[in-house]
Amino acid sequence: MFLGHYGLAFGAKKVAPKVSLLTLFVAVEFVDILWPFLLLLDVEQVRIQPGFTEVTPFEFVHYPYTHSLVMGVVWGLICGGIYWVFQKDLRSALMVGLAVLSHWFLDLIVHVPDLPLTPFGGEKFGMGMWNSLPLTIVTESIIFIAGVWIYVRNTRAINAKGKWGLFALITFFVIAEIFNMFGPPPEDSIPALLGSFVVLQAIVLGLAHLTDRNRSEIETNAA
Image (cartoon, rainbow, N blue to C red):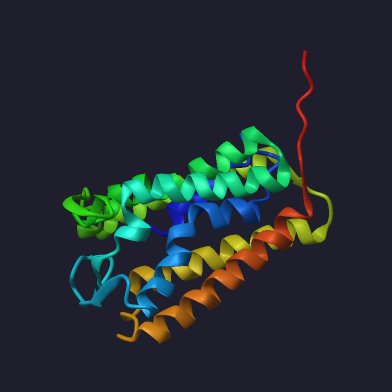
């Protein structure tokens, strides 16, 4: 899943308004940010097999340290704990931790059965939505649009950067998703995969920071 993770991060701003959009983006994508570095170290493994599913050519052979449910809990506790140490805000820290953990459950919807429960082996899970391109596009789009709608309803631009930054961010997501769904498979090279991932995250996180720092929460007056 790609857009769905970010859609959840957008929507989470309503329940965690003190957490920056940048932080929420890092949280929902934390294990995916960590993953290519573990590939480079040969701690985890992936194969690129065009046609493996209708949506993605990635065959996730071994990634228990980033994509098992147990490690999702561990990474969530670590990230939430780090946030609490610096911000001393328990509610926001809890939301950061849950955002990290949410990655496994959203991936569960789309992945073929390759998601382990623990880093020690055992049965793997996945509902296999990636075997249907139309269903994947519709599902991810619904989650993303709902999240953006919640974000827009609960924040307002305080200047032009807040308005056009959000437009640029959404436009980039749409272009990236189209390329992800219909573009050629990536080069079968871990360094190349890491490089493209770093560029993608740099653009997304940079635009998220630009957008969110130029928007403010819309306060609702109590009756």
